[in-house]
Image (cartoon, rainbow, N blue to C red):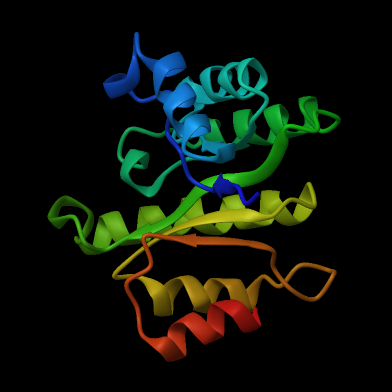
Amino acid sequence: MSFWIDTHCHLDATEFSGDVAAVRARASANQVAHCVLPAVAVSNFDAVRTLAHQFSDSYALGIHPLCVPQAQDADLQALDAELALRKSDPRLVAVGEIGLDYFVPEMQSAEMRKRQEFFYRAQLKLARKHDLPIILHVRRSADKLLKHLRELVPPVGRWRGIAHAFNGSTQQAQAFIDL
């Protein structure tokens, strides 16, 4: 019998409030044996952790690029502290969802791109520090994401993780795989 792992499931999203158990039950009925719940902001770290434990799933902690406009620099310290606190939690599997989004018009200004890159690089450094894989958000930003991955290679010599919402070329996909 085969089963699936959903590597990117925002069960904590408001669309599922009041229906999370039923959503997770339907996933299980369709052979989705495990889900990874990525955080998008400091404010939902507890929610993804709690849901992962409730349903025997996994979770990731990070600041999503679309949440960067509301994020504070102190959120990076909060992420670092939470990663350290949860280090022994076997359900914590990655830093994510992190990345760059150059698709949404509000995120395309030079100032917003710079801020996204600041948060992305800082979170890559935290993933290296805590020896965790990454869950990348990749929308019209593959080359820039790859640039930073190349500059911040972890001590083990390669990154581990998932590229989510990828819409790049075959060559870009191969570059992610190679890294």
